[in-house]
Length: 329
View (cartoon, rainbow, N blue to C red):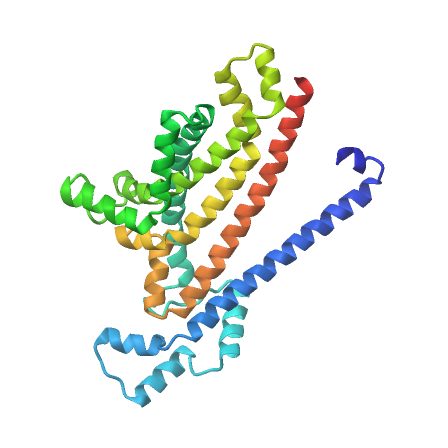
């Protein structure tokens, strides 16, 4: 790519890069808009609304007049397009609205909940890498050996188990039977350990299979034979050269996994009562808390797009390092 660009003026290269950046930004804006619109459509099509739920929480059977007054107070008597455009205009001014459920500012609720979800996602990714990358590399090197056969069975089992089932199983074993952890998660390392295991174990099974397949492909490439012919040890080939050349696939797996953890942690958070944004979103859906639901969809979409942008930038960095190392080899 560098040789191709050397024949063009610098201004043309910068203009092309600026055009690609604007196109990516435009695509991101469209994605965010569609995600929030879909969240509002699904909320609007719900058979009940926040007015009905507010009276149900108080144990009151409201009259039609009371329901109408409550809907007018919350703005639910307006047509859908007016509700959505009103919310969107406030968001563009930096106002995410007020929660119907708690009466607190939605932005404050998200700011207090998002760090817990990010901590859970990062610890789950870290544990997944610690478990799956070494095992995947060793299974690829000892392909069809005893460890490989055992781990293939184990990964098949955990691939078939959803995170919420693993969470319930962990609760039964370590909390109910062994009494090692509290049933309700605390806000410390011991509290995050069980949700992390529940998220990481099924993900590690899938991750390890992908690492194994990628490592087998790398071990079959000619550069491995060349390294062995030069007297490089198998351990160095596996843990340095093969692992380094798997950088881009690993980054792709990490990006996909992190996105899945951000969006899929809600049930695990609710099981362990972990105060993340997933638990808050479940409570908001139950209460038909439309401002929080819309803000949750908006923030999750933005976080996912930021993550993808960071992964794309990391691709270029890794490719540049690989090119430099190949030149010095």
